[in-house]
Length: 562
Ligand code: ADP
Ligand code: MG
Image 1 (cartoon, protein in one colour):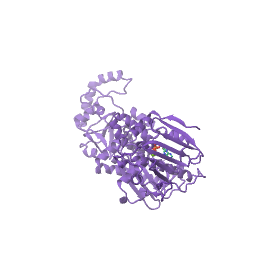
Image 2 (tube, helix red, strand yellow):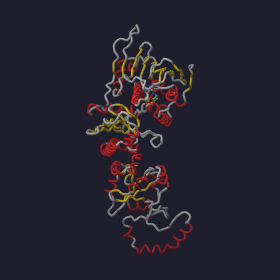
Image 3 (cartoon, protein in one colour):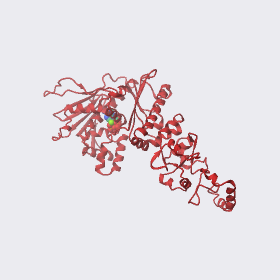
Image 4 (cartoon, protein in one colour):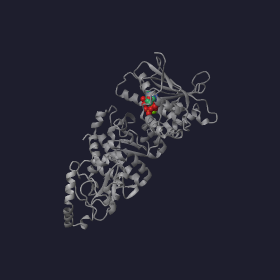
């Protein structure tokens, strides 16, 4: 097959332009991205081998190699991992398929101006393309394990790339960066310097479980002198004592597994000893991914068995309402061939799930008192997801409620806990009042709120879709019923004393004619017209039956398949 030239997709081109012209100061991260891809490729190959999918492939020395050629000004990152087929190269490298990049571009469009765009580069993993921050030409040669032909991909990042098949290609992938001319003013950016490379690998990729070897430089005669040097310690962070690992190291691991360039909001460690041993290292991201509520969202944490990577998105380890949590679980006593089917049945996996769930919920709850600002970020990003658990996980309902907070008429800014609401309840107030709606503003303007405002009774203002559902599922808190101000008859404390029964009867007779007339004329639209004590200013309002589904709720149940 001859060399063919292709055009990058529009979006890929935009991204490349940004990479090429980036003034983003931390260009070092390109190496982290390439090493991270190589590491993923080695994980995939070992897994395939464990499953006997590739019987003829040698997996005895899986590693990553870095090679510098000072004369030619090239840096090569090479792995003997799974490699890519021709089709995979076009699909994975020629387009921007990965979700991190899609999200990056989405936010980029929102940022609009160049200054905003540059800040964004620092926050996102743009993966393979980040090589163009430091190179004016990138060549990738790859051969998929088990296939005979390889593929060469080349681009200068300027709108087109070329593809050709090659006969002689070692299994795995090598990425060669032709480095931009040396920046004489800034020696910090000389990526042909071996100390520079050592430093970057140590800083960003130390925990990578495969050896990252720096090949010796070739002398004048082209012969290598000396031995390859392994740059990373390869120690699994979750297996090392807490006080030996710095926060930065944890954060780098998070970035590697979550494909996120930003720091996580919280790191959670857990060690279980005894009959069923495992270690977990979990992260709460600082931002909700844009696809968190879509069907395709890949939830789950990485599963390792005795330090061996088994799978990426192990869903069985956390419930769906904690799907934003990233991390690693390393179990000692599972089989290396464990399949999804086995995981779904496994009693130990269920035990781990229960324990991790409780730990995450407890951590969030603690965050509220120990780091209120971080808790506020958490709640803004993940509150709507967490509340799904109030409906689906009755075992942990109390823990979820304790980790939750709600906007309230008590304070215009600060949300409240149910606990604090109950403590503020007026003498004789029996119920916890709430109202659901589109926005805080819309709820506050509702006529349903009038009597509550007049009497100074606090109302929770619930604006997430899931709120309609959980209030019904939960029903009560500490013996106090959760009640909507917009449903059924209300009996605010004090009403009964003000108006005795005879008074009510008299009123009823007085208005009987009007009510009858209204009932008749509105019979198409309403079930009943009655006198109300809930209004102070508005003459009338529409009320649902106490146990009637609101439209939003009906939709929600349908979405949940019930
Ligand atoms: P991400 O790693 O977030 O998916 P990248 O841009 O870094 O995004 O890489 C895109 C895809 O290209 C990877 O998901 C992987 O499928 C493929 N890829 C990149 N580098 C390699 C490699 N060294 N070996 C095999 N596949 C690779
Ligand atoms: Mg990557």
